[in-house]
Image: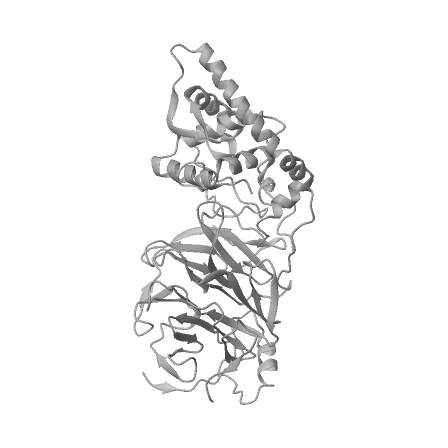
Length: 175
Length: 309
């Protein structure tokens, strides 16, 4: 009794390439950091207490992520990450509204890996068959851009939510 | 309080039709029709004490042999207790609202601040936090209280199954890790089982933990044997001593799972309306089967009828 229909072909495609893309992502992030380092004087500082997939995050990545978030995410998730109104109630379609990404939502309960998968492959990449209005951004954004958006979102969380999510990420064994 | 003997009747919630209830029950020896055959029923263990809500509230301290009527907060649709808070009993009421007892049902306080009107079909207490209480409001959604019932807020809308929102008829906080820093809340509905992480991100089907791995690897999906479709799941219980052990009461019988609800096996064939499991012994269960309260000490392999008419 499947709960929802969904883009299964997209799911399979996205998930099969998951490990390859995650490895590439870490490399891309490192390369991005090097470019930023080369262009910035003085050295672009790391954002204290913030990592993504175990790697430190640079301030320039957060800045880039903020711009990318405004262009790609804010129309649904809100300019201030506040989500759609009454987001705990279903739409008439049966789908759930876009949740907030600030500390009032549930985003900070998900690991870095899961957030990346959802953004790139859609919610169906982590919950098979789940029907959602959120598209998969893997065709429109690079891995580094997706990562930048996520580090921007993470940068807005209070300390408690950051620490919680860091622990969830650390315990995420990739199963 | 007065000691009485309980005549068991087959009924729980309006999902079961009165005709079905009467049909099943009238075949049982010693059966007596209730004045109102739509009466709900709920069971819970509070330590070794068994609580039965049906037309009133009754407690048994001797494994169901005798029962004592106790103060009832109203027509109770659902009950919840917690292993770490002996005496705390949460009751979901047909008239709406939740009542909470801290003394095993001897006295009650009303807990409805912030709750909308509507029957409380199901209640549960978070396995890891006895002050976190969940309540399902018919026709509305899943609500939570983080302060032992003092205040309530909407946690999430109802699960979406077979192209419609479905009221949870049963709730269980199941202490199995979600991978999101929390545990699961399972809901039995009119048409099947769903679960949501306690961060309330999304309702979803119950799947094997390695389902995604198999999909990625192109392997055969892990075995699943879900509960029969198209039947209401009237009651759910997760064993605190072994959370992967679960029980479900359905019209088709009493079902058990050893793996958190992925594979289910029938343990009794008579219509089951409610089930509860002891907090320290996952094989000690009480259930209303065919309208008769029965006890099993071996996870449902054998049953002992309790009480006398």
